[in-house]
Structure formats: structure tokens, C-alpha cells
Image (cartoon, rainbow, N blue to C red; front, side):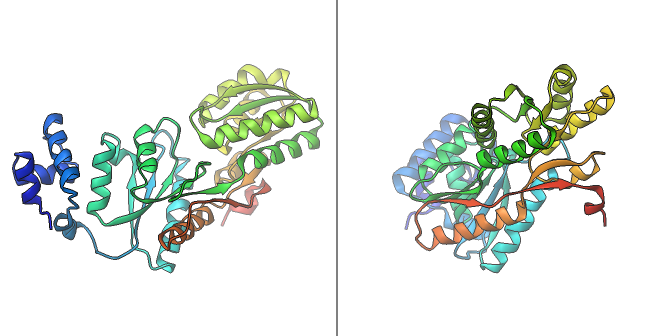
Length: 329
């Protein structure tokens, strides 16, 4: 069996240097890292001796890998529900679980991330918030070194499944209801982030709806930001009949701007955040149970770990009208 000492000798470095590289510590030059990683690959080294100090050694260990939004505290509601649902379901399924955040590995290469996870005996990874710009994490997915479940990303492979609602259809549904209730035809659509797969699907839904019904639509990107949606509303809302937003947070920004402008325009959101109930007006939204989504992702991970092939799992959605009295306790 290959040991850390063998890797150090093969790479011509100290054992402590190999340990630093395996565990992602700083203080090692890029050239030395490359030598150690090449030795690890050539010797097919899996650092179980290091993992002993880090791992419970349970079979079926999985990681919840989340992209926490550091620019607003409001979005924490989604991440906490994801964590709650995932942890609870993992306990039911007798899966050992660790939580990792994108910020903890953002400066790592894909080889370093793979070694770090293998050192912790991780067999599967559930990815939340993966976007088009996360190139290294996409390399991790495509490496197929682990079983992967992607939340709200429409990609499948032999060892990779996708779990989430049908964002395209859901966006069409909530927009159509809001438009019909208010008999408007000129729509301001505040989309999410250009790099978001969910935002891309929602925009496709709006484009299809507009083409079918003959509506007029102006699209602006709010980047899931309450402030940006507020500014967009100030600039464009006067000449529009309905404001459709790709997230609740942006819908709140739009609504607050309308209140300041002292005009009425119907607004709808997407997600079903409890915060919507405090916005001051009732708004249609798509209710997503993020805890249930996360639980379904853990169930899908169990399916993959038991030998299942990657697939797309579509969860139900429903339109709700968030009310203050429905959320207070």
C-alpha cells in the first residue's frame, strides 16, 4: 500500500509538504504543488492515514456543498432550509454528512478539491448554487470522481443527477396568473443572474409565454439583488402594466420602489421566502420548499450510491399568495 512517505520520496519533498498539499494548506509553491500532485496521481495515492484524523470512516459519507450569498442576509433563509432538509434526511438514511461552502475551496484546483474530499472519505457531493462561472466545480462534476447531485442545474451523466422544480414552467405559471388577474399586456421582467441556470430557464419561460400570448416584454437583469430590482423599477415601471420578478427578493425591491413612487403595479416573485409576507402587499409567488428539495437531493444521492444511474428528478411547484398573517407565529 502506497504511503505518504512514498509520495514524499517520489516527489522529492518532505512528508509535511505532502500533508500540506493534500489538506489544502498554504505555504507551498505552485511548482511544488504540481510535483506532489503528479506523484499522487502516478502512485494512485489515497491518503487514508491523513483521513483517519478527519473522518468517522463511515461508508456513504456525503458533502453538502453550498454557495452562500455573502451580499445579503435575506437569502440565508434558503441556505438554512437546504441545510435543515439535507441533514434531517441524511440522518434518516444513515448517511454521514459534512458541510462545505464554496468560499472554503474557491482558490483550489480541481485536483486539490478531489484529494481533499477523498481524504475525508467522501463518496458523494450535493451541489447547491452552481453557476456557469464555476469552472473548477464543473471540472469536479465532469471528472465523475464522486457521485453528484446538482440542485437546480439541468445536467445529468452516469454518476450525476439533477433535482429541482421546472423553473421554466413555474415562471410561466405565476406570470400568467398575475397578468390575467390584472389584465396587463406590457411586462417588465426583472431576471436573475446571467450565469444562473435557474434564471436562464425562467427567462425561457417568459419568452415562450410572451410569444404565445402576444404580450410585450422588457427584460432587465436584477442579479437577484433587492437594490438592483428597486432601481430598475424606478426607471421602467411607469410605462409597464405588470412587473414579473425572477426571485422574491427582487420582487420586494420592486414593490418598495412602487410604494415610494406612489403608483400601483402588480408584482409577482419566485421562491416563497417567508420575507415576502413582510413586504407590505400580497404578491403571487412560486412556493419552493427548500428543505424538501434538499431532502429529495439526499434521497437521490442514496440512489446513486446504491448503483443507480444519473437522472433528472423534477419536483412539484405551486403558486401562493404570501400573506403576513400566514407567516407570523
